[in-house]
Length: 116
Image 1 (tube, rainbow, N blue to C red):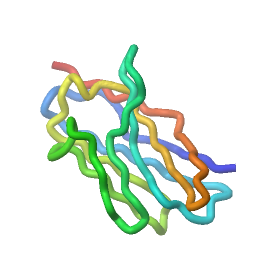
Image 2 (cartoon, rainbow, N blue to C red):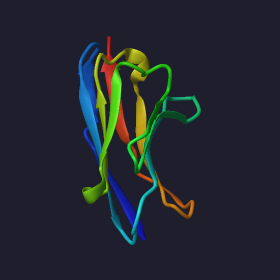
Image 3 (tube, rainbow, N blue to C red):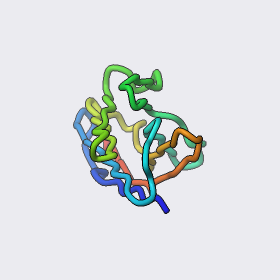
């Protein structure tokens, strides 16, 4: 069994910053891709950013230049530094990890609310 524990969400004013963390533990021996997704009310879940074990990153156009994804492979932890937050960034943010065999695991989600 794999557990993903997210932290760092909260309420922030527009223009502010937050840092999300997601730590993976349990029966997981290696992780290929780690990433963050988000889901706003009445919208589909969307990709925010991903990072491979080698450090290659991918960002949604809407967050490029404002968000930075990073990871600590030794700790099986992925981070999302979010700067210059906008009200449209308000959503539940989910962590996802993918193993080399293609298994996906999701976190429980953490709420990010940006007030105008």
